[in-house]
Amino acid sequence: MDSFVSSLITSLENHSNPNEAQRMHLYMKEHFPYYGIKAPIRKRILKEISDQYKKELSHNRVILIANELYQKPERELHYCAMELVDRFLKRKYTLEDLDFITHLISQNSWWDTVDFIAKHILGNYLLQFPNQIPTIINSYSTSKNMWLNRSAILFQLGYKGNTYSKLLFELCEQHKKSKEFFIKKAIGWALREYSKVEPQIVKNYITSTNLQALSEKEGLKIINR
Image: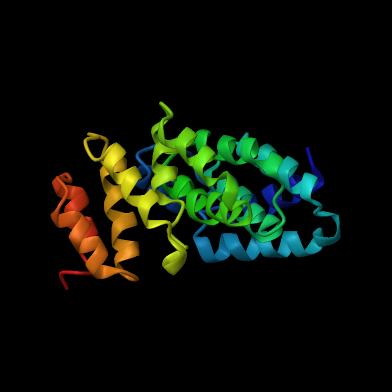
């Protein structure tokens, strides 16, 4: 076991809370076991361990650590993996990191990790390599993996005025008939975020498009305040 991983697990185990772990387990539909550590404490622990090993956290080692953490069952370790990647690889990605990012989205998949990865990791990767957007997003959007579809819709959440609106609306069109709750919700969320920048454009799109009720409701939340 990597020494970073070993130190992190030991510290998390020392802060475990069985009652909180059970509550988290139930809240996440019993998909994952938890140590029962709330986010502020978990993030403090991760920062302490990361600062301790900072000089050793090269690009390749961060990926190795994240992959090892993702093989563990406890959900907090998955959170630490993606937060570590976001801290140390942001603006330092290589083109070859796409397979790694796709793996993070596709494994241990649930909304809590997928949404973070889509916005903070995939989104930043594609800001660094914008020429890759058409190929990658088309691949994700046409995948049979629903979480890759959701990531394609959500990757621009942090783009604000730099949002590729034509692409956003094309993705909404591709998936607007989906019966998947997480896809309908993603469409609404992506449109709602863009409405903070271009409310009239989003309103015009929604009112002229036959979106499903949940997507429309979510997309118009800010506009209809």
